[in-house]
Length: 72
Image (cartoon, rainbow, N blue to C red; front, side):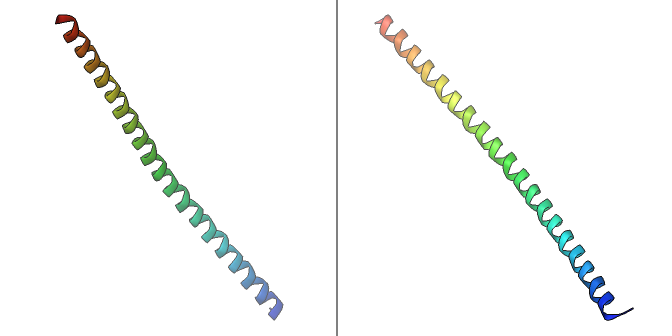
């Protein structure tokens, strides 16, 4: 085996390692984004629920106020 073959083998080994590292990094990124996405969706859902509840509370308050005015 000549020096050229050794360099070729080493270059192939380094290329394989770089490819593996890139894939691992991509998987970590996808995992992190998936987690953040779920949290973001959950937070949006909670905010929407809270906003809806606030709207219902306001409507009830307005209805109660209207009833009180009619009773006077």
